[in-house]
Image 1 (cartoon, helix red, strand yellow):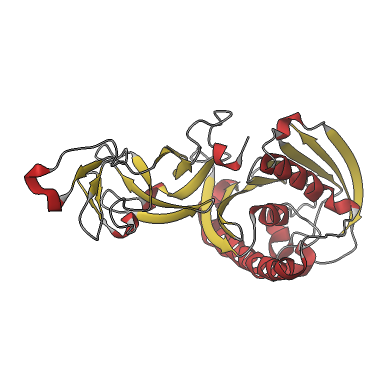
Image 2 (image 1 turned 60 degrees about the vertical axis):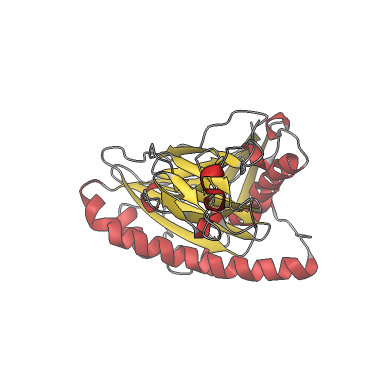
Length: 340
């Protein structure tokens, strides 16, 4: 197994218009993304075979992509179908074919997979309750100067919230919490207990009766985190992030905040968007600092029991990096007490 076996978001569906070409980076590979004549997304290596210009700087013409340098034209399969300098003497050749990658469109996202023959035919991750009646989804996109592992760990890490997001999302109260952390089948599953408040600005709105919160965190290989809060009827929330590895230390994160607040659904949209973006910007800043320190001193982390989640996430991603299948790692379950 390798990271290239999986599907990764490259754009929102709505951003990829019929006459648009987008430049993207994925696992160090440069991509030109556009829609073919049939409207389906196309992903080609962002390099013209002729004189190595970037195809993403070109134009889409009737579902084909024309290089901006000398006008070579590529179809959805990467085949060169026109060379202006050759005029009527042009003959198609199998030697003139750019690298093309598999694409899929799902839940309002366009996905690309780099591996031609993946070890397992995984499907793109299904975003919780996307497009379902009674649910609203707010989407935000942010770039982090750090790697996928550290981004994913941040998104399912409770202890940092009291210090990076004080008042907005928790405050340090030394409240005793319990969690059960399981690693199984390439995923990390976390269930929390004893939460009933300390949700920041919106505590009264989200949990005005002070009932115990049903809170779980999930990590799905290789790059998905999903946080779920359930606070009684009409107070159900998912925060799902897909961390896209552009390069070793640049991660583009697509986050869906999907919620069911009953009659408040529409009214809550601007507040949900603003709060999500405000919190994520704070995480962008702290992860940039962490990335700088790691670049200088490495990743010799000192763990606490609350970091069990991180240890399990790292074991899964390390297995993929070694070419192994994380689903074969032994199942582990740990109960942890910590304070926030």
